[in-house]
Length: 259
Image (cartoon, rainbow, N blue to C red; front, side, top):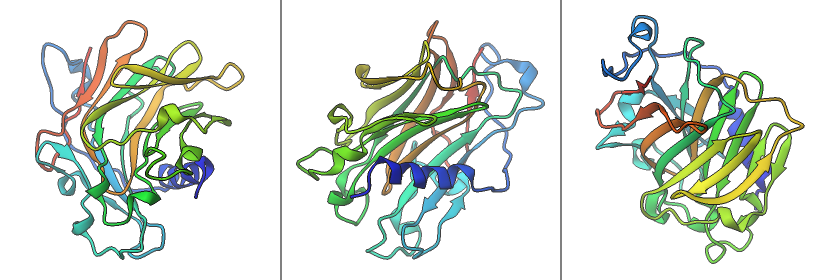
């Protein structure tokens, strides 16, 4: 089985592949959103199909093709995929310089599921869910995997990473997301922490690592065709909501930036 390093390689590939940025207007709430950003800021979610055997090759997908029915999902039947292709799908949001969110003090929360029937390949090969953040100076991730009765070796991939610092083999990060649950990546006081349904799972300090810096990108990667119900980013110091997306408008990103 691939270990956490393999997972990180796949993530890194998609995080750094260049692509043309799309633009779209974002939803505004005049009482809660900084109106000064409305003229300059246009951001939208981007999707990607990640192929493991090039059948078909990896490619990016616009939001009009993966936001439907109140969630974000790249369907396995939307493209011809070999039944032997243990593919992944990825969603990312790139934030422009005008959005000043401190990457070292956030709760990145997502409502997610990645059921065993979400992909046609055997669940034994994984239904991982990875949350990642990327800042101006560093990046971090948490990787949730299926439980050991599905695959005894899968715990090798369960872990946290910040820069070059990795902690894996964490049974706390084994959970079958058969229905919607929340997964949280928190940065606070030079530490990365993982929560599920507001329960603390594991943490990793990064005193010897660079700070994350201004938040530049957030993302979710699924092994298979997982679902995202919503995304929220809070300030982990004061609890203020900073950004949200409910995927309630078919075919269109509706990211809200809050004061």
